[in-house]
Length: 92
Image (cartoon, rainbow, N blue to C red; front, side):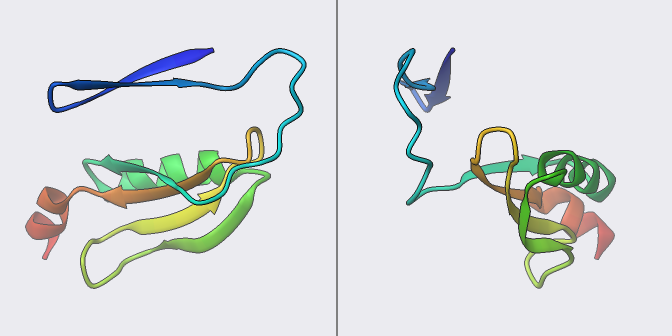
């Protein structure tokens, strides 16, 4: 499978590897996703971490009302899930 991410006017292409190649795991990065509200963030965090490894449990922090880090079970990808700053500002 392939993916395309747009960052400004640049495209970043990604692939999950080659058929038959053995996975060596992921290291040195985390994917980060920001959601619009704490309920959505908590739901997404729970879904991604189901069967995986929670590194920082879903919680409120000094910079946002919701944040957590995990490694998903299905692909072993490290994730950071957080609530976008707008929701944190409204809730404060």
